[in-house]
Image (cartoon, rainbow, N blue to C red; front, side, top):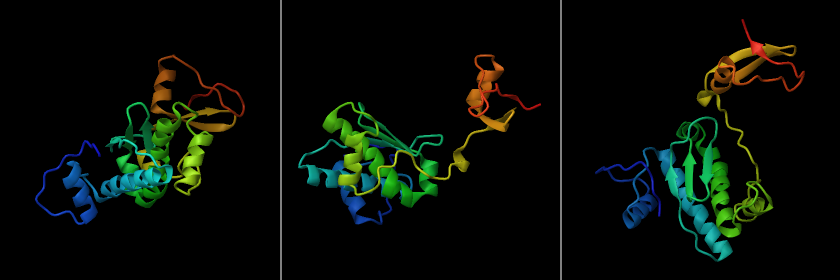
Length: 191
């Protein structure tokens, strides 16, 4: 059922009997945290709901809690894999369970039902609205300050502009120049 990078051997009982049942039946490696455990249970619940409403079985994805950066989750369609950001998960458990998990599960289901379609197209929106009864938001509204990388201050006529370390490195290596989207002036490093 679930594959995870977190294999943990422990003799302490799991508090949730549903998780104990899932782990013993399918030899599911246990997640490291309670929040990760909640995500695994929500994924299974979402798959069961989709199977019930669509009258079709779906293969379960492999699940990793290894995503970095500002993204909360990603769905790797051809690999049938879900990746979640463990830092944002721990900071926003409720939002993950109610919004991020169905969002990413819907991407996998959409690919399995319709093949390659627009990532947030009408098919995906139908799954979000029809099965999970939640708005088909394309991006999350989570606070990402704790996972934001180092930023460098540049400027233009409009004022300061912050660049990520990747963009800053491209500028310093003379690989590219960036223009302000408001005034179209080439931004330069703050000296």
